[in-house]
Length: 125
Image (cartoon, rainbow, N blue to C red; front, side, top):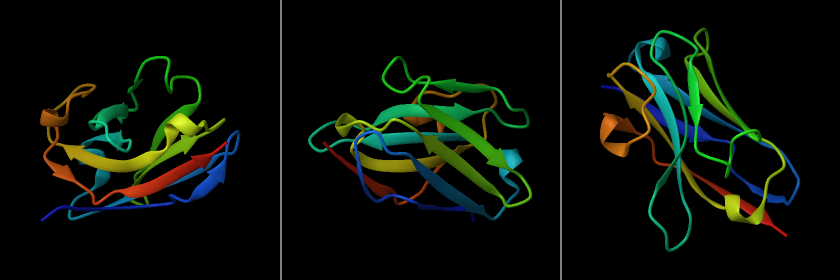
C-alpha cells in the first residue's frame, strides 16, 4: 500500500519562501508520476506542478505559479519537494501531494492514484 505524507506547511509572510515535502512509502518514488495540487478556502482543488515518472520532466500551472514554484524529486529519500518562492496571499490553501502510475506530465486529478492528507500553507499580507 502506497502512503504519501506531506509536511512543511506553515504561516508565512508575503514574499517568504517555503519548501513542502512529500514522503512516499511503499515503492520507490521514481516509479510514480508525482504532482502537487492545492485547495484554497471555498474553491476547488487545482493543479500546481508535476514531475513525470522515471524522468525529470516537469510542468506547472500557468502564470499563477510558474517561475515561483519548483517541483523536484529525491529518489534516495523517496521524497518529492515543492519549493515555493515569493509567496503571495493567494497561494494560501491546503497543498496535496499525489502519485500516479501513468506516464507523462499529469495535470488532472483523475490521473492520480494515491493522495496525501495535505498540509496547510497560509500566506499573510
